[in-house]
Amino acid sequence: MLRRLLAPLVVVLAVTACGGGAEERGRSTAPDRPPSPSTTATPSPTPDRPRPRPHRGVDASHHQGRIDWQRVAGDRIGFAYLKATEGSTYTDPTFVDHARAARRAGLRVGGYHYFSTCSPGAPQATHFAEVLAAAPARTMPPAIDLELLGNCADPPPRTDLLRELRVFLDEVEHRTRQRVVVYAYPDFEDRYRVRAALDRRLWVRRIGDTPPAGEWWLWQRDDQATIDGIDGPADLNVLAR
Image 1: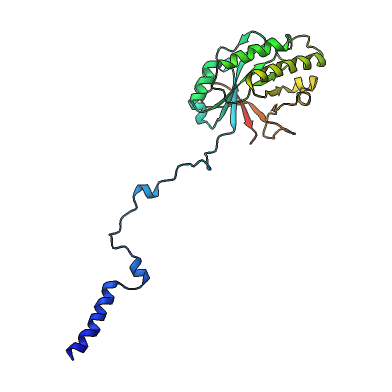
Image 2: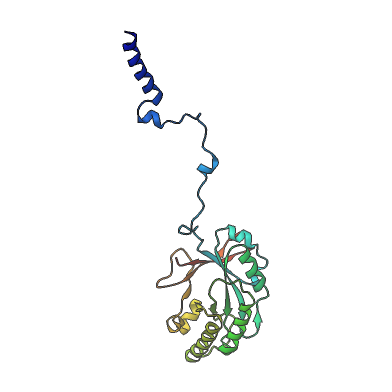
């Protein structure tokens, strides 16, 4: 009788020692505790998931005075176009310092040249390219600024102007190995119709919230913008995505 009772008891003890069903076997015997920080930290960006870069930018010159580029970058500004030169001899005195400071703040940087309709394109191109070379931190293509304001009282005919512009573009592109972006102020474009003739990426001015018609690479949407780090109104631009 005792031996018959001991046999079932051994079976019961064996089952108890092995645990119950699958749910019970999967349960941890360690006391409950919060997960360690390493298991809850947000994963860092991976090469296939880079952080998005702001597509808003400013253009500036010595007229803006001192600029705090760290604050500018903190105001969702991702790039800056800075005036480098004008005509055949003028160099903006703030260009190199602004370019270096903007790059240290994490902005992409490009230089632009204010084209003089009063002088040939070749010497202007040489001057522009040499000044650009002094700011090796550039990461945006060079640009040309075409405006009537502050230019010749007696502008040249369209044929002559286009010839000099093409000389300028060819020389700058040869020296920098980058295609020049063309900004033509509306009154300049109305007079000379350069956009289609030059066949370059366009920087188009259209103040307001409505993007310009047609193709554009940069859109100047405001000339009275408030940007942290810049005293007074600033030019705000949008880069095509």
